[in-house]
Image (cartoon, rainbow, N blue to C red):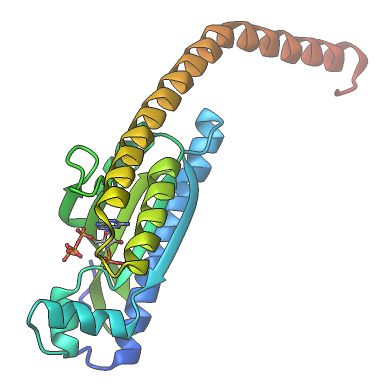
Amino acid sequence: MSDKPIQNYEGVESWETIILLYNSALREIGTKLEILNDEFQHVHQYNPIEHIKSRIKTPESIVKKLRRRGYESTIENMVKYVNDIAGIRVICSFASDIYRIAEILANQSDINVLSIKDYIHQPKESGYKSYHMIVTVPIYLSDIMVDTKVEIQIRTVAMDFWASLEHKINYKFEGDAPEHIKRELFECAEMVSDLDAKMMSLNEELKSFAESQAPDKRQEEKHRIERALLKEHFYGEAE
Ligand code: 0O2
């Protein structure tokens, strides 16, 4: 470790520097996730991540959140009390991928997990399901290092589909949707869970089938390489 001073936002007073830090943190986490996805493709021939979305919370939304919690709108309060200024949403194919990705990220030595909210095991009253992590990642500027907060939301395609519609409905009704809509949304959330469970079990079956075929494939590949080597040895030509 170098002698560089380590700071936790102290001395970072300008809005521009704060936004630079949050944008950089989103890029760091985004790159980590892309690398994981590439590795899975390389080793297991499948991508656990369907897509990744990231955003910086708007100043209006930050001020609203601070006000709701009774804090003054200052840069100090913003970095201290608003955990989701930098937010990244990871959309996975299967529910099992969510925990795998969360665990791998949490085990990376430069990531510090501040808190976890598992709305998959304990969904919100509305039916909302997602896995939330607040983490910090070190961002190195020219003369300081700042552990910068990022909220990571990890969910399946189906959970994401539900959450976006629910968000739209809540926005339309300003958070006070009619009871029958809330009820139907809750029922949809249960359907989403059933769908995720069914898709995951189908995928497990597919994986077992692929694994049962693997020895034949490996044998075939071994013979192909042996034939190529023999050909090169006797005729001096590579395939
Ligand atoms: P936006 O526009 O998505 O940013 P904390 O962050 O821990 O201090 P908070 O904010 O209560 O406390 O955290 P929580 O409960 O983990 O929720 C944060 C985010 O999760 C929300 O951000 C939403 O993105 C999402 N979320 C939480 N509950 C629901 C829900 O019932 N429905 C939907 N569709 N999304 C939800 P924001 O700031 O509300 O909005």
